[in-house]
Amino acid sequence: MDRISQIGDVAEIMRDYVANKQTFLTEETMRVPTRTYTDPDQWKAEMELVFRRVPLILAFTAELPNPGDYKAMDAAGLPVLINRDKEGVVRAFLNVCSHRGAPVASEGHGNCARFTCKYHGWTYGQDGKLLGISEASKFGEVRKGEMGLRELPVQEAAGMIFVCLTPNAPIDIGAYYRGFLEDFEALDFGKWTYMGSRVIEGANWKIAFDGYLEGYHFASLHPETIFPRTPSNCMHFEAFGPHIRIGFPHHKIADALAGVPRAEWGTQENNGFDFVRIMFPNVSAFIAPEITQVAQLSPGPTPGQNRTVLNYLRREPIKDEADRANVEAAMNFFRDVTYTEDYLIGLEIQKGLETGAHDDLVFGRNERGNQYFHEWLNWYLQDDRDLPEPVL
Ligand code: FES
View 1: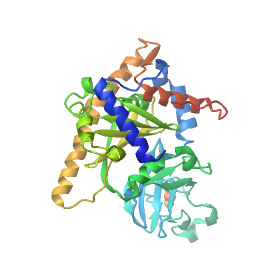
View 2 (view 1 turned 60 degrees about the vertical axis):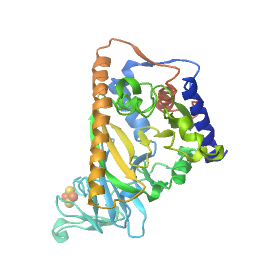
View 3 (view 1 turned 90 degrees about the horizontal axis):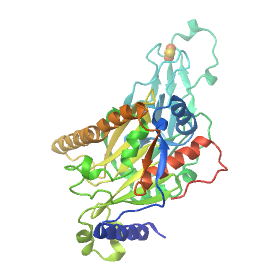
View 4 (view 1 turned 90 degrees about the vertical axis):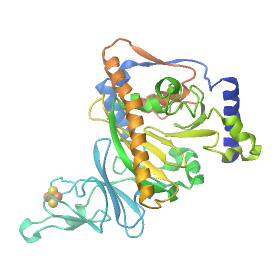
């Protein structure tokens, strides 16, 4: 089925959910051990078997639109440098100088033809090759050709830049995304403009991520921000391998769609319904025309911490200074709501789970997105590709 027809069918399902006060339901509840969120061994296994293995979304095309643009960042605890060379090709490296390990670019964005390590001034090209050694005649023999930056597997598609954090690992985002990238291509995501980012910190990355996977909490936790537009506990889930498109109908979905021919309902995202797109393991994108928020969650240095980068993009470029001021205010607003309404309770949950009060947590039949995420996480942690994959 084509994308527009599929979304049109989902819109109809969601319209009926709202009319009948229903939601997507699966067969069973699911129990998840509490230690999943607190155990250092689990944290290590997630880092090794998930975050170092799967392609992670580390940047957007719109962040590095021009030749020479680069982004240096922390990615799940590793210093990473992503750049676009003068031919437009994107590369990724561990941001670690081959002399004595300093970063060759400071965290943030910039544009340059070559990278100069701030410790002793060695220089590297956009292809990561070592170009120059300061006072080389006094340094002694080195094999320059073997002393480039360590490259990481990278692919760019659908407006996103995917990196695998293990050098020489295979990367195949087409196989990994199972058709989900076509959804972003249809949105023309690669042509959007990057507005900026905000960083927040919170509890275990899965406690935070669980909050992006259901709308069961909207009435109680977001009575004045989300609930006025979107009913609580009314969701639809579609799976693309481990990735999920979560549909959230508006209270007024029936009115919004009433004047639109049925064949065009699939074009009405943000008019009567929204989608949150979940890219396993750690990205949640809420697409909205005014401003789109893409949250990238990374496990922190301990099981009880995560670091979340909230990225903001928009279809339209910035028009003028007033527009820029409005965008900055909107980014601050979304950051504050996400932190105060979702991340603070996450910290309380972390504290609660560490008491050992309960051996397990339970996800309801209505919380299928959470169940599916944990099923896929467990599938990766078992590290056996012959095991049957979870199905929605
Ligand atoms: Fe980079 Fe010395 S550590 S030049």
